Amino acid sequence: MIVGRRDVPLDNDASARFLPWLIGFMVYLAALALAAAIAVSNLTERWDKGLSDQVTVQVPPDIESDGGQDARVQAVLEVLRGKVGVVRARPVEPARMRELLEPWLGSQAATGDLPLPSLIAVTVDRGDPPDLDALRAELREAAPGATLDDHQRTLGRLLEIAHSLQLLAMLVVALIAGAAVVTVVFVTRTGLAVHRQVIELLHLIGARDGYVASQFQRHALRLGLAGGVAGLALAAATLFGLSKVFESGGEAAVIPDLSLSPLQWAILGATPVAAALVAMLTARFTVLRTLARLS
Amino acid sequence: MVRFENVTFRYDAGPYVLRDLSFHLRPGSFHFVLGASGAGKSSLLQLMYLWQRPSGGAISLFGRDVGELSRQDKAVMRRRIGVVFQDFRLLDHLSALENVALPLRVAGRRNSSLDEHVVELLSWVGLGDHIHALPPTLSGGQQQRVAIARAVIARPSLLLADEPTGNVDDRLALRLLYLFEELNKMGTTVVIATHNEQLVERFPHPVIRLAGSDNMISGGTRRTAGAGR
Ligand SMILES: Nc1ncnc2c1ncn2[C@@H]1O[C@H](COP(=O)(O)OP(=O)(O)OP(=O)(O)O)[C@@H](O)[C@H]1O
Ligand SMILES: [Mg+2]
Image (cartoon, rainbow over all chains, first blue to last red; front, side, top):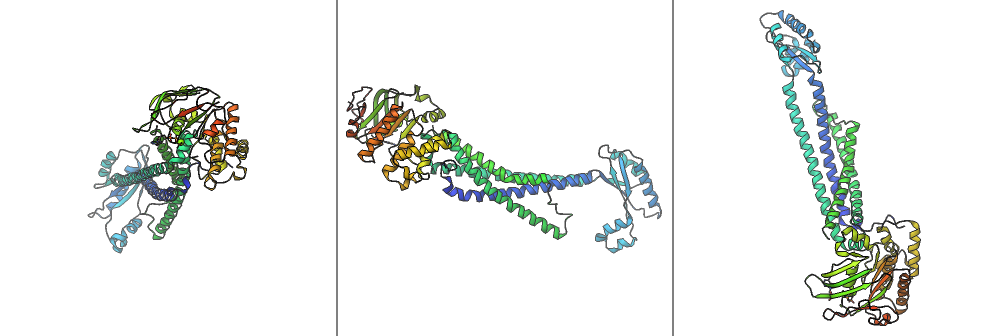
């Protein structure tokens, strides 16, 4: 009968109506920013894994001599296969090459008339990679003009961009958190002013500051959770919608995959909880600090 | 229990409300504070329940100098002091029952047997039919009785009542004073501020008279002070 009623009637305040909306909106934005950061990190990880053990050797076509190309490729393959640290070296089939080039060069490439360089896909042992510079020299000796591309330049640039994007996303999350803190501080101070008489009375009958703070923090926790869960639900719906759009667009190779691991879903799912906890702690801290200044 | 030594008091830079007031209220004593409207009765009680600080002099409560108390100390000390405020200060959004139970809740004591105790007390002050009523729906006298019940529910060591019978008829006023006497017999030190001389004369308790800011008369501990018999 006694327990459960709130001593400070915060539920009737304007804040009880607008705070959940604000927090919901903030959680929505934060969840999207987090999802973007996670998606980018998934993507870079895939790049990293996919490319860091891949190098490509290119043997340029020899226009003068007609039949020497195969011999040169063979010589290069021999060098590669004799190397410690090279797991696999496999020439890319000419048919596959033409397929890849067709969009750019037109069907002419497909006829096989055009002299094309030969490509050799090499997988290196990441734990014990060969000395690539020495390897380059050896390859040039075996087949003049042969080059080795380890994709590091491309990969490095991509990773740089990806990391800036992640940093930006984290900055957005931090800014949102800051805005949430400021909002809750303001709402709590307003609540303290509006309910000054009730709080005075509580103090007069022996309430500690912590008792008063608990009233405010419970209120903030409740509102934060309510708004946060709604915001997260909206964010999940948005992400789901986006992934559907991308899937139907058929550009899956270019657009980062939005499928998240369970842990990553858990991180996203924790945003309303985090928001509610931030709101709660902010409310508590604000009350304690404001009241301590009274004496 | 309560010791005032050369206490002066005024609001900010306003005129002196209390001047050079010294007295000692022993544990288990029962005092009236008498004075005309504006004489400083409420101000004196506010000093006793730690809501105001003296402008000069020293006050000690329960053997401790109140000037040295931290906020938390004050909170704990106030749990031993029951106050009936002149303006009641009930929480309008809580029922009579919840208002009365508030001091127990604030002190972290909550169980259902206390609930019974609260209902019993409300019945005693004649509000058995109104335990779930919100204060705004109660008459002035009914609100005052809720305020009194709240002040005594936690069995305070010191009870301070500011015009606790101002809104009730004489018969009920006597009944409420008998309640205070009962508490006093169980050991509670009681201080009642009032301007009702007739009521005071019906009880044999010492009186502290306040007579305006200029010619302050301090009742001290003289048992026969003022109208006491
Ligand atoms: N908060 C305040 N700020 C400034 N002056 C005040 C304040 N409260 C009371 N006073 C002044 O202090 C003096 C004493 O007031 P107090 O309320 O203690 O009188 P009282 O004896 O309780 O009167 P009453 O019988 O009408 O309740 C009055 O002159 C009043 O104007
Ligand atoms: Mg008064």
